[in-house]
Image 1 (cartoon, rainbow, N blue to C red):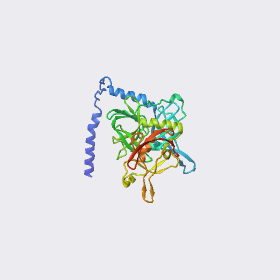
Image 2: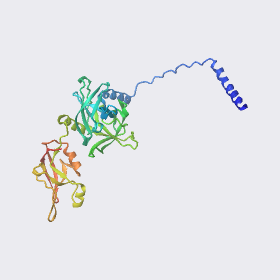
Image 3: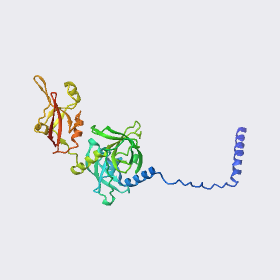
Length: 362
């Protein structure tokens, strides 16, 4: 039993100094004096000004899915993901990424003042990962984002991203334009060209939010990150605003992206390699009475003596094209009824043809 008594005695002796200390007077501990910081820096003031000006235009989007209650078997809408968007105009149109609402049965839009509205899908263009929603809020609540341009962006200029990363709404991050003219893949596996690369922190939930220049103008729509971990790794991508400003009005007007059509089907690059053709879109089908047929274009075909010569479209309005994706991207800048000039190669000779585009069936 002695070890036990010894342990208790040590405990008692160790407590006595503490009890004695409690009875002593407490030292005075006033707050430290506050040191004046001086005026905010010009860069800080601009950060604050951009956020105050643009944050009322940024919204939180909750995609809704259908779920059946286990007990009642009633079907109800439940949140299945969140993203970001921004107010486009005073008619209630909100722009976001298509992948934010992809597969959803509905969506709710929460404005900066935390008022929430059920959204209607106006139109979407998955090939460019753009969707337009509309909400029935009072006009006074809409503060449209100021639209800039992406054609004169320079690597190194400052940018801002405002969004809802991981559901944390109204978050501002800053960075620079890291690179221009990147290519990213849309949800339909079409290539989105001219993407802006930035090191401004972009995380899950930022998708569909605005990328802004130092004047607070919209220059892109944040859409993707490159990250092995799923979090920000300093490599984010945005759809350039010039592309957005071309597509959104057409979605609002028509409810879909009405594609112009040449009435042709192009082959893959393996055809060019096999036949020794120049870079371009080798035509494997030309629609009867379509725009290309009326202009005299011919498809490659098989004859008794082998392959019969057809046409290779090498440029649209002077812009070189190497694949059908290139050609579709060039044509999507136009509308049905517009005319374009095609550079066409056949049997070693190149000529230029003017074609009036029709409306695509898709």
